[in-house]
Amino acid sequence: MTSAEFSQISHTIPTQAGIYKYFDAGGELLYIGKAKSLRKRVSSYFAKHHDNYKTRKLVDNIHHIEFTIVDNEKDAFLLENALIKQFRPKYNIDLKDDKTYPFIVIKHEPFPRVFLTRRVIKDGSEYLGPFTSVGRVREVLEVIRYNIPLRTCNLNLTEQNIRKGKFKVCLEYHLGNCKGPCEGLQSAEEYRDGLQQVKEILRGNLSPVLNVFKARMQEHAMNMEFEKAEIERKKIASLQDYQARSTIVGSRVGNVDVFTILSEGNFAYVNYLRVLNGTIADTKTVTLEKKLEETDEEVMEYAIAYLREAFQSLAREIVVPFEVEFPEEHVEITVPKGGDKKKLLDLSAKNVNYFREELHKKKILHLEGKSDMEKKKVLYQLQADLELQELPVHIECFDNSNFQGSYPVSACVVFKDGVASKKDYRHFNIKTVEGINDFASMSEVVYRRYNRLLNEEQPLPQLVIIDGGKGQLGAAMDSIRKLNLIGSMTVVGLAKNEEEIFFPGDKDSIKLPYDSESLKLIRRIRDEVHRFGITFHRQKRSKGTFKNELEGIKGIGESTATQLLQNYRSVNKVKQLSKEDLAKEVGQKKAQLIWEHFHGEGSGPEIQPQ
Image (cartoon, rainbow, N blue to C red; front, side):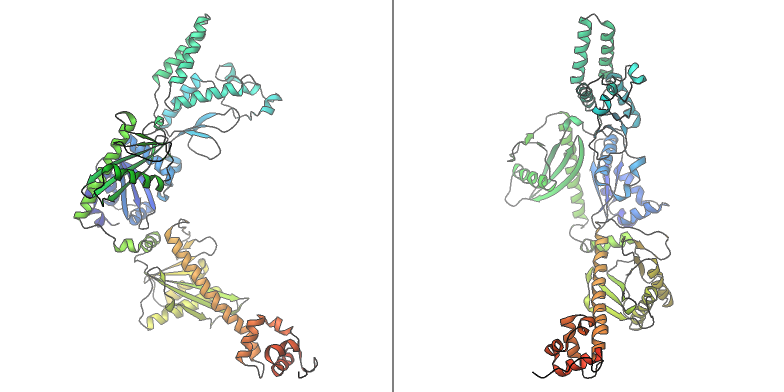
């Protein structure tokens, strides 16, 4: 997207806080960012020249932009992180380490440790968060450590190791920060009770923990253990002072689906917020056309069924602005009047209103309907990924083939508008190269191909793919230079094994995402040139090892050689045939000629007439 193109849509971008998502022409999510003012932040990408290469490439690849409006900057902050974790856009890779947010992990191990981490590993551990700052997480852990004694060592506290007495309690035990599970002084059940209290604290559900501490305090007081009762009272006070919200909405909301609707004439717009563990994971707005003046309730019921299936939602609660009938069992319909769920409903309404307004502006600007970009989205994605100056509507690909240095051939396939143009395919017999020399062969065929196109005044391709690494690419570029075609088209090399793409003169290759539409198209072109080249090479090799030798026998013509080729496939097998078998295939006279050619006159008995 150019600055001029962006200027036409900049006024449609909301000024509220939220997150923005950049997509390329193929629909791939490129980048997710947060902003206090979406319009101001997004405009900054197009208002100046960026020195950073990756930023320039990102801006060049942007095809369209989507937004999710939130209530404040903090919510945008958390939502951005949640979406990056889920979708992992390729331009957000740098955020893995220095811009990810901390979690508290309950490690999957005997007597699990509880600690801060930025790495979420699928090892069976339980992760709670994310939190907005490391400082806040450390404060939470300090509250937990003060109130709930848990181990901090990294000993392997298996039941067998504890029973063998391998470990001794450390200073933490004597300070009262640990109850000594390493020596069997604390049972696994008691330790699990402490972990459950930790989870309740982190989820903001303090009542169960406070009730435990209050019961202990009363018990100590009744037993005249006032010092112990005072310890419990201080724990209660510290917990009452503590309040943490680790997600946008609050983890107590859990997994819910939120829907709002806005009707306008024959059309209705439905927004869907998918909430997982208190965090907005997906947002989608769809347009539905009313055919029979359906009510909002009827449209909503249809939209809920469609969107839940599309997103494979298993949430057992649906939040809506009015009562609807939903046939799925064990699913609760909620119409909130206040609290976090009402805030979610209001947030969904903001997004559906914005969608409607943006759609109206698009109608005014005549931007509705499919454009040429949408029709050729794969080619536009390829152009963006390879930073081509022109749209690659004409692509050619070369490949070499030989058999132990014999019968060298090359093939060229042509794709136009992303589709194979078989009438333009060409194969080449190598004329100037002897033995195995892929580089020289590639140089020859590239020169012959484009010298002919120039002489015939035929259009040149926008993209040329050389199936091979740096060596083949360099050989092809030698011919391109001789023809003074540098800059007339883009030439790249495609490594056979790793699917790496090399540009002339570049030290490092680039790798397109494995499932990207660009790479899928390149694979199709590469596979086609392999197929076309191998087919031609087999024909040539077969003719060289069978037909030429057989046709060289005086009295044996092309039809006889072809017949033997089809039936026996190899010269060696023909040599091994007896005269009787040869006679059954080609007749007595020709069989005698072939036998004598391979075995010499008088090597065997004459074939007697039947």
